[in-house]
Amino acid sequence: MKQKEMQDMPVQDLALMKEYGSATVVSTASNFIMDREEAFTHTYRTYVRLREQGKLELRFWFSNAVDSTWDQGGVAKGGQPGGNWLIEAAFVADGGTGRNGEVSGQSQVPVTFGGSLTRLVRPGETFWSDSVEIELPQGHDLAFSWTIASGSGRSVPYNTEQMLVTAYNTPGKHADEPEGDLFALSENLLVMPAWIGYKKQSHLRMVFFGDSITQGVRTAKDGYDYWVARIADGLGADYNVWNIGSGWARAYDAAADGPWLHKAKQGDQVLIALGVNDIDIGERSAEELLQDLTNIVSTLKANNSEVDIILFTVPPFNFSGNREHIWRKVNEVLRTAPPAGVSRVFDIAAVLSQPAPHEHQVRPEFMSPGNDPHPNGLAGKAVAEAFLQWYERKELR
Image (cartoon, rainbow, N blue to C red):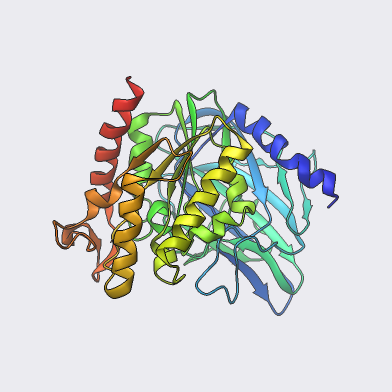
């Protein structure tokens, strides 16, 4: 891709995102990449609850790059470009309420790209679909089906965390088939466009920028009970909420100013909830983590001096030893002297933590099964209620 095209992309992205609102609170940030020994053709079908139903004009934005590092980065690292691959067909349809692999055949509408039913995708590029119109009855999901083909090697970035929505996949070209007989349930395999938009004038474009805790990992599939989803419900559809939480993500992925931060730059308001994985698998010191957060804020401000940045404290994650020490030190700084450019700090740790002196531990009722410190649906409710009360006090001033 030519250098001038790369420089122009943020302007193009921002212009269209002013016309369209984020249609779902489901995060489709990518933290993994397909790497196959042989060429393949495969179809993926995903059911997503949209923020509004009825007659909709949709548009899809694609980013052929890995957003954030998975595990130690042996397979996928933040900023890594995807490979060459082909969209052979893509369709939207009324997904109904059963999520059983089928769609309403009469509702299927092809998604096109510059008038074409196919699109060759190059490493690292971003691009839009054409607009598509569909009518969804109240309470029905949108079904997005597409067939992807690629040669051997690395190709399509995707999200490999626990499934928060129901999705299916099958070998071959079957995106246009309404039946679900050939499809098998997907596990740890969310293959979707980077952004689903619908024609909507919004009060504010909010980007929730974090890791698996922001993404909603460990909450119920199709439950939409993680805190970003609940906050979006509480604010209403006039608030444009884009969730780009990504499992295993860390602040230094964002501070590198790659594809993931480029997404965050599209917000009027960016809400940053990072740090758990930096302290844990990233093994960052308090000073390194604070510097990464400072760099994220300064980069966002350099891109748009008017952007409103809300920083979250680092959630408790049952750290011990030196990691507990780092967690406490970072949160003390965030509460008392956050990076320049941050307008407010929301203390999510205070909501999720046990009483002193065990603030580094998650309240037992908020942990996921198996003593997993990822916040569960009950925690999502508590965080959302606390955030909305805190947020709306400022909005009313």
